[in-house]
Length: 254
Length: 354
Image (tube, rainbow over all chains, first blue to last red; front, side, top):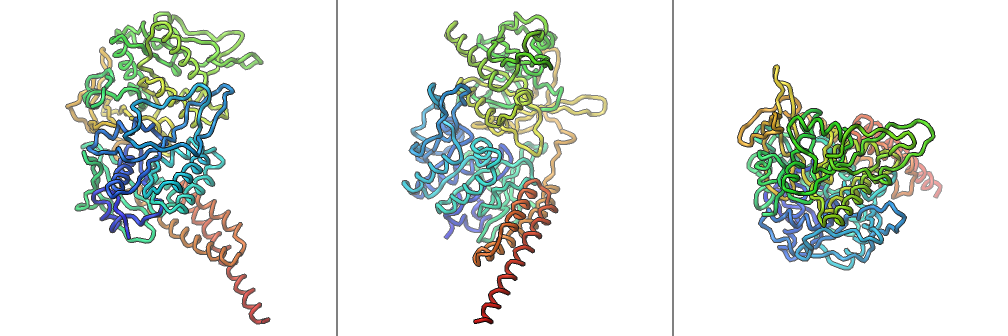
């Protein structure tokens, strides 16, 4: 049994969709459409009556909400967990890790303005606190789909240099054990960049972005999909008012 | 449609479908001499003309030079608040080094005269932290004085700010916190940044909400210039390359003209995919090793040497050193096969005894 991704054309490339309850990564350069793909994935779940959670690490939820207005979507029912760290205090005020009692909000309840750093203490998101928090949430609520935007943010800002590899591995493993269908975005620095997360994920959807005289052209390919066959070709993709659309009629040779 | 804030260049505003979304940080990048600082100054000037409070954090050039350079365009920057964060000459003797933050040096451009001389007694040290502290202090002063807030900030350049801050601190986290700080101030920020090293992702690129790229190349005897928007969150934008000129009035962008870029812009999708093939080879071997690893673990065999080799292979792979990765994987594979063989032999011997 496979589940749809919510991106027109992508399910055909995946020969029917994603195998549920596994973590997958969506990789690609900045501005290639990764966040948009996550939203479509969660919206698809909402449309099917599932609970869906967006974990925001790179941008505050109010901005994500504002950004998604350019699409004709109602993301109001998607729940969002604000995992943006506060401003660092350089004075000796307490730095507190986000607690495992923080509750996600629905996007429709997200305030217009940014959450401000309190004067007395600042909250820091670490991979450990986030993992703990997610664990509590996944046990308590029945999320069928989880999107993490981004793994790169988690690596860069919530882990110490020395623990990067081990912590990433443990985080991916945690998602596997929680048996939730998760999409994680990973920024790639170049076409050949193979992020370490791709070894640990059960599949990798790679977004490509090429500039030529007609502007920016986008493509998508499946780099890996454990337990299923998939298309090997690269397909063109467009960002429309309805989000990402893969043109499966024309393939580009790899 | 969200409110927009003008970039200060008409043609660019057209490309942006009205301007930048306010309150967010954006990257301006491009090779040296492509006009990054001038573009940032257009953005500041537009704010000053509208009576907004603007701040320039000067890290690459001292404000005195900026003042002279921008005078060639006939621009009056007197109302601009500038934070002179060009570091002092390092005194290589045992003297007090103080944080810039503890010696507030925010001035109106009007008051900028000569190069600030390094103090004989103590030198200023620039860090992300000290710059943040100064902006905070200055914005607090502004609020108390005139009940207004800064709306536009330019950091020229982000690359310099990070360079000065390399003091064993985790720069990525400092930059994240700094950008968060600017977001909470609700200012629209242009971060002038040197082009990205293609093999790494700098934190400010990861966290910025958009990226404007300036191009410059030599075509015969002419210098050609162009501008492109590489990404912009929350809005559609013109994604084509548009010609740009720098004249007596500053930057002009021609949003209806087209230009064909030469050189590094013509990317191809082919070459990377040849490399991706070698990556696939490594991947296949990796799967093999993982399978034998599980087999050895199942019989409680010794796996630490193989695991170490596996880890090295993954690091090598991540650095795109495919051959090295294959070598480590072969080591791991051999070690695991050996372990399985030993285990089998021991089991057979045991069976014989029984």
